[in-house]
Image 1 (cartoon, rainbow, N blue to C red):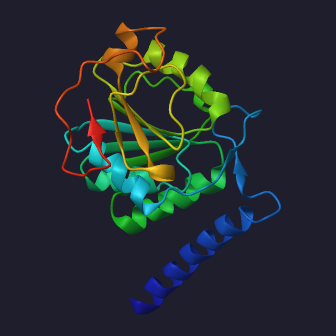
Image 2 (cartoon, helix red, strand yellow; image 1 turned 60 degrees about the horizontal axis):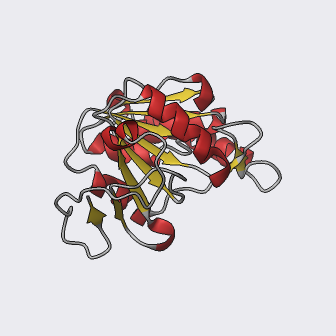
Length: 213
């Protein structure tokens, strides 16, 4: 009935408000989906960043994991494109809010969100990995992903590139840039640094700001 629906929406709205309140100026902006020593500021992905992630994954399918999934927008957008999408996030309020957003978007059956420290999770089952990281954690994360991922996996780094891997492509510009890495490249060329020559493949798309190798 209309009354039941309004009551349900009211409750869900209150859940969303509580999540937002928890992320207030005193302590909310900082969550730590990586090391507790390395706090990642909760800065939601821009529309352009989400679009760039989807662009570089447009020929991909299967499973996708967002490391430090925040409010779930990457996971939800990926699910709408047919991925089986999973988010790992240490902040429980953000995880609950992400589940609510996925339900609202109608993709709750193809998404899941977990309260977890990324260093305690194995990512070997995922064929697509997205990370919004900070420089302090990227070096250690290189080693973890290099060890765990299958050679067919693809990694997309947002805001900051990995320190030693040579990217196989980029999309976007400025703060919206994303860097693309094929696991086959960084697992084969273990220990190499950016600047190492990588044989180019066909460019992805017609966007002048997009380069794929």
